[in-house]
Image 1 (cartoon, one colour):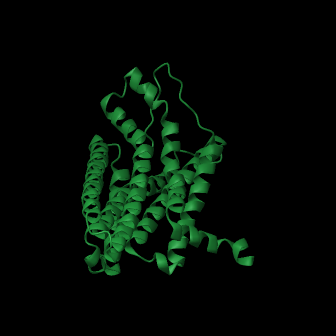
Image 2 (image 1 turned 90 degrees about the horizontal axis):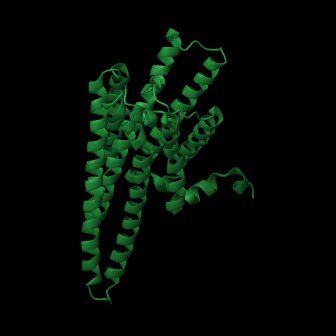
Image 3 (image 1 turned 45 degrees about the vertical axis):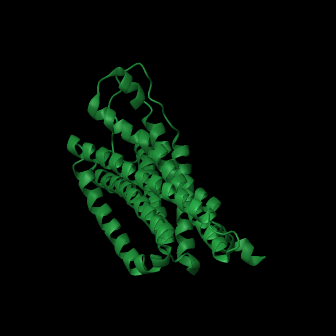
Length: 300
């Protein structure tokens, strides 16, 4: 998705080596594929939350794959092996841009689904398995992927229109506001419930169980908050770039910011690189699964 124009300011365009793009793309691709395989392989991870995490990792995989292939095409074109204006090359570029848009929209919907799942886990624990059945989880995931596919095609087809750019930015801002509100509301209610539990008689066994359950749910909510924060940090500069294109395309100060576009792309790709590290660091079950999947561990 070409969002750059000729730089008419005194700020030189920052160039990132192809090797860095390629390395980030390949490492993040391997990491997210490992997460997907781990969730599928371990039956203990066949729960709604890990299904949504697996979906998020799959969207990250699409992002890593699309940007890696795009940078590989650019490198081949610079060496004279590809024609950047050829019909097949342009069609392939549209496919990769569609995958990137799918990754963005899918990540937003996945974070929203995970936030709702955490809310039900914490505040409707006794009814959780009746509310979040695997059948409903599959239906939600099917709806997410269908919506993302249609949205990605429309975004790429009409991306030159400012209306589509505005819709994309509005969707980003509104989604962030909804998810942030849900997390803040969830943590506020969690504090209230924690105080109520602390006020119960100290000798009760049920109190200890409730404290452990609230502690586990709180850690899960904190993990997802960290993931969401990383997503915002990595994607926000790219959307600021889109806003600048629409608001001040010829302003020299805006041009200076736009000269950093390749760094914004590196940050965008780093999101798919950081997420699996957070999964592994925060989830004991995933760490255990990763260790069991390593071939040299099984040989020993």
